[in-house]
Length: 287
Image 1 (cartoon, helix red, strand yellow):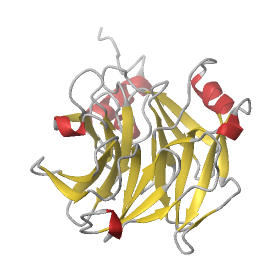
Image 2 (cartoon, rainbow, N blue to C red):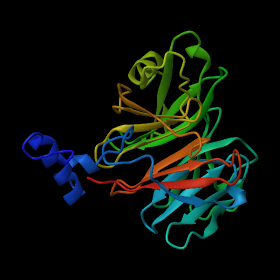
Image 3 (cartoon, one colour):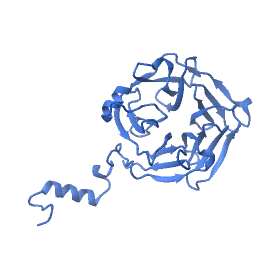
Image 4 (cartoon, rainbow, N blue to C red):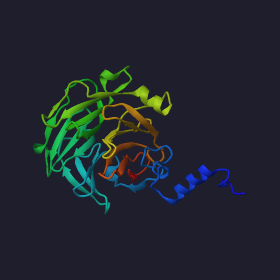
């Protein structure tokens, strides 16, 4: 007798046959412990140049099928060619030495986030600080930001607190909006994320949630947030409602600091070189 005979286990046998025949079924669209369309266990992995050992942000550039990247302490914006894997300088000496944490690229402008919440507007081809426009964050509290992303629904950049002064004892992570039409920050919160909801979703009462990168998925329109601390991938609505939480393998993602998507849903996650070279992980999307 076979292990799954058709007479005794018709439903199980049919499901196994479907999964074996096609990768387009729901059986193949989600790996264990992975969001729909991805398998977090099987990325395509690339090592990055040592100049990007402190890579802290990614932004997809559809014009040239490349990724723009920023590094904590380098006064450069880098372009990573996804076909040739070559690295080149896109902009350099655009600002004084700072703690650069994330970036968002548009066709002729790149916005760079500094850890205190300041946003720099860097036009294409800038070679010194004279061409960079500076937008300081309005709060003078002790704030630490590592995350910035673009929300087309509100035509704004959104920055997420890693830890902000007003959050102490509140159990929240706060988002602030930078209006691209007026070039102003809102002084009230755009939304907040409950750290208790994150813990409840993953069923770990002591897990740490400190956002280190985020991007809106181009197809399902949900917000994907990395937390290097706690090694999490948190998926929320674009207003901060926690929907799903996944563990990131610490061996593959020792310090996940950048995330971006191609228009077809391909997900890119970068890791600082915590135990060796920095890495770029590529996750193809099965929709």
